[in-house]
Image (cartoon, rainbow, N blue to C red; front, side, top):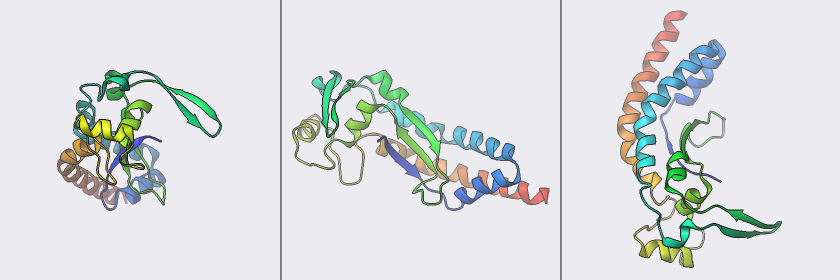
Length: 171
């Protein structure tokens, strides 16, 4: 499961879904504009990955599951940066609409390590290395995206209002 953080703007889900009903091209244009507006948060999420968290984290490891053992690639800075992606989730039960996620498996594990089992060996090692995690938060990406949040919300609100005016003019 990827590590993610969300930016919530009231009305955006309905706007995106409504645009698809009116004209699919309007929805595509809207998503392209929203992606451009969210780029500072994506860049902030990528910038936090500047070193390997702890020495052994760069090595591949095995994860024992109920169905067997699977190999997990070690932490790689370039892959961690490349794993920061944005996607839209306009499902009815979605928590957020614009999700900035960490798709790289090792980086997502790093972000989430210790949340379920605080005090585990991995959690303690990461805390000692200066990567604490608080309940309900990720280690790095959430903080970075949250700092860029206000500017994005302001620009998104302006874009939603403009899109709504444009659609009303069409009718």
